[in-house]
Length: 238
Image (cartoon, rainbow, N blue to C red; front, side, top):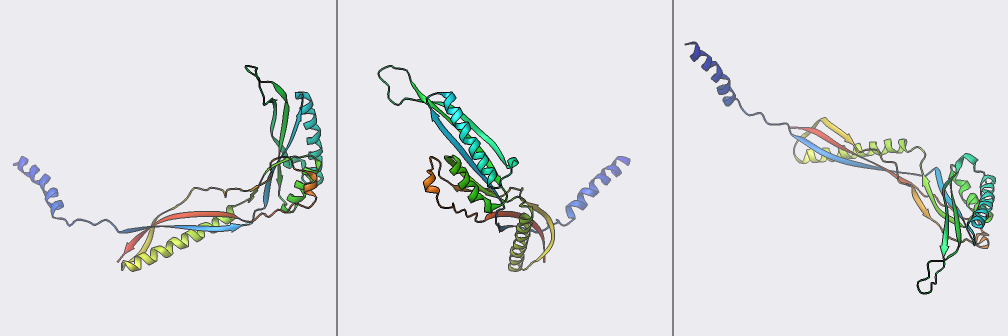
């Protein structure tokens, strides 16, 4: 008797579960939105180089060092603080003769020294004058100029607000078309933070004649783009 009762008690929950109506999962809607904000850069990174050639490694290094001293002095006089100037590369390499006879081994024809500087400029009005001063002082390679935003966080917050509003409008349009209403947000995800890419300004890379720089170098910074995106999951209601 006890065994029959125990078996009955085990079967009752299974029977009740089979008779209970199936619970439908909640309806949800997933939407994404992107926001874009344009901002004027307020920081410039300029890479300058001095290149010298000489028959010996010592002469090439000495000539390059003398030129670089003049370039450093000129850049500082243009209003760039010393702590905004740093060496980012130095090379001293042999140059080989182009013509060879028979099995003759490569012959060193001279040496080339290259010293690179990165100049950080937070007053964009000084970019052109600093570039002109460096070239007039002996910089013969201006390799690139990058524009950046010092603190892009405010622009990113604005882009996130735009992205969220656009996602909401899209969700409302879809819900109306489906004869439904938006319920509470079930989840919200933003993209990982990526600073705006520096915008490079391509520049001449070799042997700039001083006469060609008689006029002031115009520099236009333009704008940088800050983007953000969100993905939102809404509950749908009838």
